[in-house]
Image (cartoon, rainbow, N blue to C red):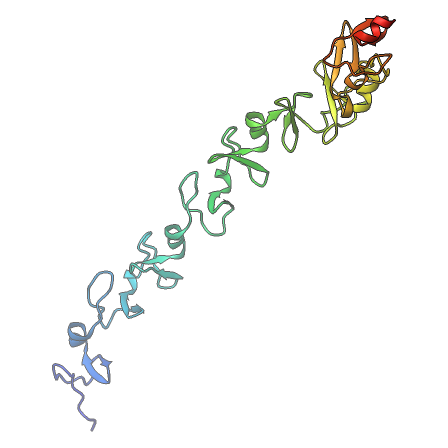
Length: 281
């Protein structure tokens, strides 16, 4: 003869009946559903003894109620994420909620998809396009103007300075002379084609010359010493008179060698004299 086993709550005999053991207490199905069953976090109904129950962090669900809060996909046998607001989501929907948004289309950039990051901002690869031609930039080089992004050719066409010599765009480096931009390779001596960037040079009639070519090809000859008047060094100051030119330091009286710069003088043939020496001729 077996011991009698009764429901802890209603005291009905459980012999031959279905029952549930709850905290070492035997409970009939009816009392369990009424007094002991956990409440489903989704539908707020009791999770009966005959129902399959799922739990996570002290929360309970019917198996059919354990679904993604966004797409309603059943998650009983799937990976899931429990969010701080209490919602349960599948991995895909959770990524959409928390993922960075594309700066162009404002849709979520899903983890693992091709994207472009620049200055803490992110774009879908296909959304990262040139502001001007609208073509995807991909892995090609690009430049910015304000908040706008340009491929190199469009930026060059729209914003780059153009060389005064070859008229092509200056993309890097370059020099400026008399408010005109030049490629360093284009800024050369008119005569010998030597590059003039970083060297001494002078200009004559809208052309530039290195010092040597200016001396031999362009510079006037001093009427005194017959050397070129270059404007460099001691030859900075020049005296001009009736088509003739002198270094200032060469403009001296032929007889007494007195400097005649800014003084009265007398021309006799190719020679210059002070007034006193001219009287003695």
